Length: 118
Image (cartoon, rainbow, N blue to C red; front, side):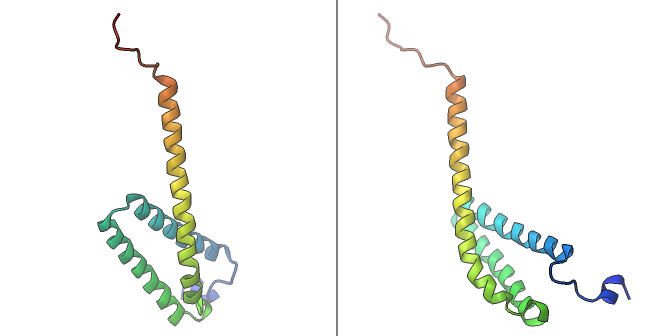
């Protein structure tokens, strides 16, 4: 019997549980932002498959892990709102980077000279 089996499931609020929750959140954030950034029909299919796989895992957890009973309901409410927030933040980031690039280029490149010859 290993240590985890001897100790039983992790207690709510344990550092291991916190790390696992952070991993799940990072996965969601990356899935949403990458697929939205690509904004391609093929990517939408892959995004849908990825989210379906994640949803199936959440459903399995809800069904087979008593300590996570109800997580599917929370997931179903949380996911759409979280996706909107992540996409908005990703769009703002891309816009801000575009502004910075434009400013940097404008600052570095001298004003074009007129081609008019007198």
